[in-house]
Image (tube, rainbow, N blue to C red):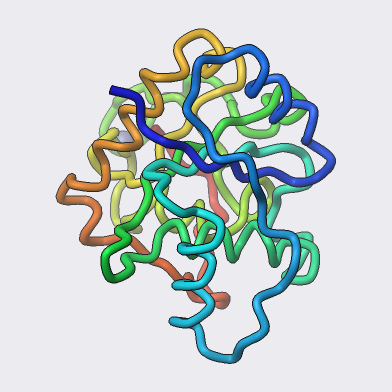
Length: 206
Ligand SMILES: [Zn+2]
């Protein structure tokens, strides 16, 4: 069974989205949020985006490129932040989506730092920089979800992360993985509106 996907990307990365559409066997909704929802009420905004844009999708594929970082500010990121919030939001009769982050080749070196020995547990995890320099906090807060760990395992995360090349090789494997997180225990710890003051900006591990 294929899960319906919503694709979330910065307009500069539209060619990647088109490539996916033309070349990969993915069931996807072809629309994006590019006008603000006119309301002060968060619940209304979330419900509206879920109904009008995310519709019956169950997985949000977030293309992460050079312009997807928190440090670029709210005005620059307001659409992708709203789309991620609405994706994470557990609405009435319209439950939250799984989140699959796909790192685009232009920032591989910024994100994937290779293996490093952990001074605390002696493991040798892959160092992955998911922080304010690479993604918005709606993503990072649901990727590194616990501050008291030296190393993380797949079960510690709600968001799934992969690279463009791996995604293109086996798209539905990663989509299934993100889909199954929706009913995983970790879904109880999802943060929809991350605190702007707190940051998990330090280096972190797989
Ligand atoms: Zn460790």
